Image 1 (tube, rainbow, N blue to C red):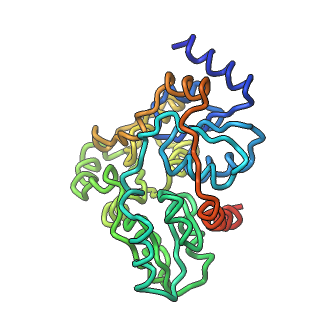
Image 2: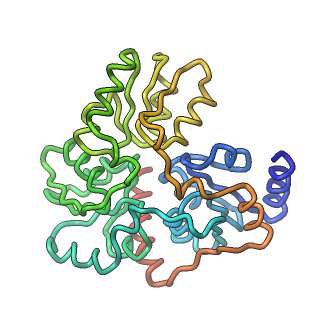
Length: 302
């Protein structure tokens, strides 16, 4: 593996390329990544970079987002089959129909959506900034898609805003039940329970902290506690165990795995860099319209 890592690092230098990796990736990907983080952080890095090539160790909508905001860059997705079940729950036509039912409400789309869907929305959000984004609209009613759980969590934090949600979800997080949290409390009474807001609202309500992957990591960094139950994808727990060996991390369930996120390998990153394959391309009209949606988010998030 060491030889593989060195080859990738050398190629990055030769081709003025960077690797952006999401925190749900297999942990060895971090060895070649220039930046590792959540969707908001990686979007910001895609916009800021001076690299000619962006290799995105993530899933399809993330690579699309990088291309949307950095159209002059060559964006590569090492494994073209790395999709997102949540993003696939709504297509362009379903998006249009959803808007027709509430024509006067601004539309917020979670970043876990396709470029075609983003092109029909007013502003984008991530789990890091969803609350801030919805508040910034100053609207009594907003449409939120595709993640109903995140939308309802936002609504629970904003008493004067009605959030009308689309019926989408992340199957990994949606699978967590109240009984799982209650059992974790009994088994680990001294542990703080850290929950991602893609979980059901009744689950999120039981957490000591609710936040994005980066928010969870930041909470651990600042906390003096020594035990944590992690209620999100395994990649986050893996990185916390590596970075804080003096603390104990319990993954809420062993099946907290995003299979699409785990598809990308070091071999595929090397191959994509060598041959510059699986390049992301977008219709320019859709790219421009979806760029407006993302740029508004980045402006509010500064």
